[in-house]
Length: 389
Image (cartoon, rainbow, N blue to C red):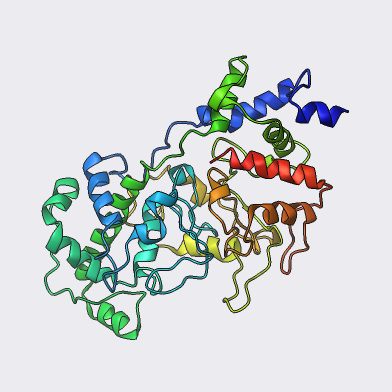
């Protein structure tokens, strides 16, 4: 009888006071101001963002002239793509992550191997299966095509005379040899321009923010003590799903806050993909971010000596890091299948089944505990998640 009342939307008290507080915390109205990026002094510079937007969509910023950031981060798909593994000049080993709200996150990528939007933006540029270009080539590209706009943001370009067209410390053997043959002055000049490319792209990406959903309008009405109606209303099934999401189903344990993510890393027992290299998630990601010359404490960062707390105090070891991946935002996720870090799960309903069944992790220890959820409850959860579109 009680379930029938809830499904009919006739329960005398649909959400307790405690539940209403949790619902308010999930609303975009609770999103704090965009955090400052002390490592990027042009993070909020409109000229930097404008040039960053140009670069974001420019296919020339790739080794073969056919790939841009927007190839995978598609503007008409909430800045994500719809394939299991990202595809640039080749195929990657991971699912593309959405960009909306990424500026609030202290860690980027599924394993958190970068600690800022700008250092993250640099990685695909040199990755041989993403943009597939070279560090020196990108610096020369800016000098040839955007010198005036670059100068208006950062001041004069450094001297790039004598810099070879194809040189990178991360490239193929020939590119690495060309990089080693460069003088320290040339390497420093290239690295500074390369870092600034990332900072401009990041300034644009900071403008990609989550958009209001029907859930947010529902939460606002609830907060105001009004009866949600029209495009602020949730169906009885969606309200049951919301109640489960913040309660029995334990989804909000990790998918919390207005972006529906705790920005932490969790092993959820997702199976590895046959044929892909071993992927240990955060265990290797934390080592990589600490070694990154473009991290918050590195020589190309604009941060001060008292900044970079996330990096300085990051957990660097422990069993909980093995095969742990970043909690993705659930905003808009219902329309962005497939799911998980390598697209292992094809449908939203299967994700719910996975979390309820809580399979044992093949490596490391899963954070999940089995849940008893009826078919009706699983359907209600899916219905609520679709209200986040």
